[in-house]
Length: 141
View 1: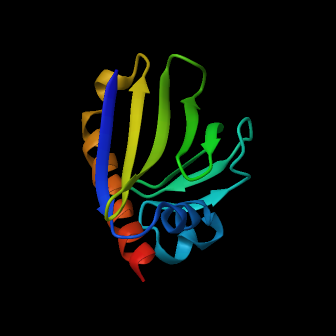
View 2: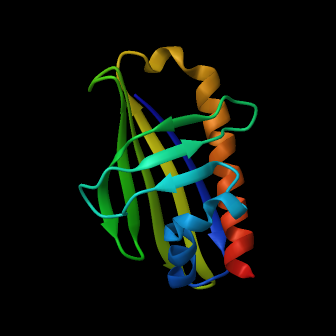
């Protein structure tokens, strides 16, 4: 198992950050990591997500939404081929703070291929950082 997490403090209310995070039709205009997300952000729904990690190869996958708690948590589970090969549980958690919102973007990877993915993990973490910073800039505007 491997876990990547990036936490960013955003000087905007949770409602504003959540609106930007779930306004997926706008992702191509501002999001450097998740360049496209199609589908309904409702538990049980299947999405089509395209990511572009910095210095990495863009990829498209079809995860299933596992949590969509308005203003608090958005999560999906993606798999390569079948369960247990390479699974990724991607989570966005929003927490109100005295000055705005604490956004944590994380992914937990499990499966037999995880030990072979060191370079991908570093690029993915850089993508999380880029997205969080872009979301921070967008929410403050």
